Image 1 (cartoon, helix red, strand yellow):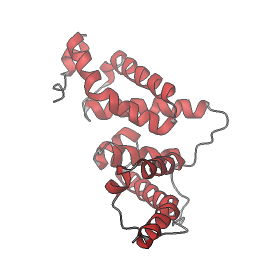
Image 2 (tube, helix red, strand yellow; image 1 turned 135 degrees about the horizontal axis):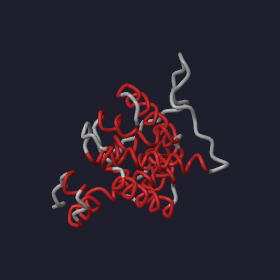
Image 3 (cartoon, helix red, strand yellow; image 1 turned 180 degrees about the vertical axis):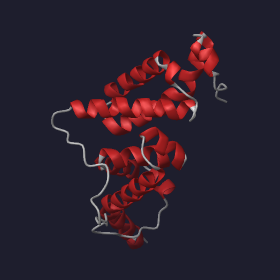
Amino acid sequence: MPPPTPSIESLRAGDPQALAALFDIHADRVYRLAFGLLRERQAAEDVVQETFLSALTHLDQFQGRSSLGTWLYRVAYNASLTRLRERPSELLPPDEPEAGEVALPRSLVEWGETPEEMLLDAEGRRHLEAAISALPETLRAAFILRDVEELSTPETAESLGISEGAVKVRLHRARLMLREHLAEYFGARAAQKEGEP
């Protein structure tokens, strides 16, 4: 059972137990977000350190309109974006589609396994992780926060600094792109299963 969320007052007072509890509760999730965006372990670890250091030195700016966890996600997301922008070869995609643009997959194949079943074997998990990595950064962040970390739509919007409507659009586009990316692999996998005796 995770430790209780420390109070803002105890954090601002520098209570070591409160600081340790804050780290215990949120460090893994902050790391998963950073790694999901950056795809580098060392960079993700650096973002975790930067996130908690920044949060602790700027606690006076936390106004309590969102949860402390959501605020930490926002700090981690911004730190990850800064690192992505520093990569000379990595161009960030536009945040939203052009007016009238609809992101539709080019190919859809139905497969019988649920996402949970796909994750049970290592090969399926590798293909899914590769597909998530291939998502544009803005879609990947929405997908990780909403579907992997299971934040609510309002929490995801707050963490990313966008509207709830934009979260829903990004999430829909991410799911379509993932389905398209995985369609060939899981379509072949489903055909192979049908051919089994």
